[in-house]
Image (cartoon, rainbow, N blue to C red; front, top):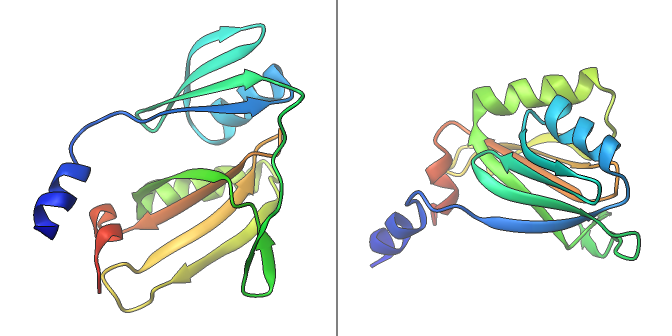
Length: 148
C-alpha cells in the first residue's frame, strides 16, 4: 500500500501556490536571477513563475506578511514555508547562486538524516518579501518519502 501511495505522489502533477510579496521588481529578480525560475507572466501586481515545474503566483499584498513561529532545536523558523526537493547537483548550483548574490540564510546549509535513504542537504532562505523557502538536495529525491 505504501508503494502505491508513494507512486501516486510522484506522478507528474503540478502544484499551484500563491504567496504574498511586497514588491514586484525585487521578487522578479530574486526568483528568476537567483533561484533560477522562469517568469511566465508579469503584471503590475503579480508574477506567475515556473518554480521547478510548479505554478507559483507571487501576488502583491502589503497586508500579508511572513512570520517566525516554530522552534526547531534552539532556532525559530517560519511555520509557513514552501520549497523544492531537487537532485544534489541542482541544489549545489542553487546554493552557489544564492551565495554569489549574498542572500542571507534563515537556516545555514547543513546535512541531515545522515547514513539513511533520506540523507539530504538542506537550507532555508527568505525572498525579498519575507517568504521562507526551503531547499532540499537528495541524490535520489524520491527517497524523501522513505520511512527508514
